[in-house]
Length: 427
Image 1 (cartoon, helix red, strand yellow):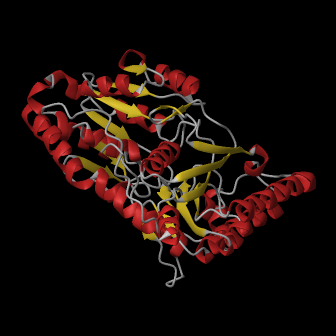
Image 2 (cartoon, rainbow, N blue to C red):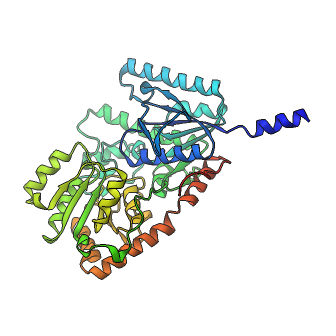
Image 3 (tube, helix red, strand yellow):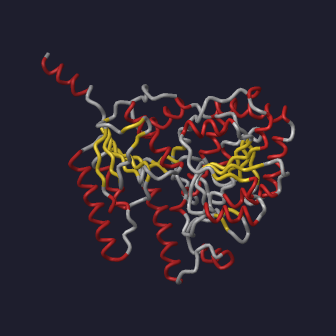
């Protein structure tokens, strides 16, 4: 009888997981995605330890509290340039493997990091899963990854000698010595090969999976779209001010690869009644403001900076269409999906995984760099107030069907091999 009670107590102990994730303070879609996964793991009763370069001040629900055990190891996440840097990084990776050996967690989850050789050795100590959020490691080119500036197309080539031929015409490997270009190609090819050798891989889109799967039919990662955060309750289509349809929103990092300059050029193709609100911050903000003045758009463009979730929800009520003009390979393009949840139509460049959630009606894609096409789609959605209201209603309905939070969590936990259920997580 005593043994039976001991067995029951052991069975009811919380599951354990050691999760590797990059800088959670960095404002990107991937980090928001990771924060939501962390929240779901905690809600499922999983005892969680985080191996990360920094400890952010806030969690998805406020303060972090004591429910997480932290291992802050910034050197582990540095590039490790030079002999000294590589040795320092190798020591940190050895410490990580030593921690896995000592802790003996049931699960080791890499939520946000690049492929590493050390991860191949983890499955000997714990059940292992690697989440792919981006295609950057599969491309040896400089950012914006996989966007070819001269031909204004998206590259689908796997890393290899053929990249040198593309570079001769596109200059995508940058103004670097030949040996550095070869080094980048080898590093990307090695990263792809490492991912294929990992036991459990979860990709955030079919596109991301395909960029690593090319030429390897045996590699078949699970595809689970990221949990889409509902920014606000969708505003009833009849409640929206008809004039809001002329307000275009750009939401995200104000960087060239995210398309801030594309957004400005698209605005020049629209009638004077249209304006642009850029919500976000980034290194390109000053240049973007200058470019807006050069194009004569200063009076039609607002740079609002980062907004809190409530402020952003309110801002979306006054935006008619969210524009997602990314010129790099978006793994998923979460901002567009979030906009649809708020009942706001979307026009986007067909970059990476974006097209996988666009329905062709309330959310539409055009070719990367097709500024005139994007402007035409915006006008088609907004020219008539009644048609725009219908598009707002359709956006919310499409999002409710397409981005079921509970279903997404269930698929993710199943793919990770976790038996727990995030029952306490808010939908």
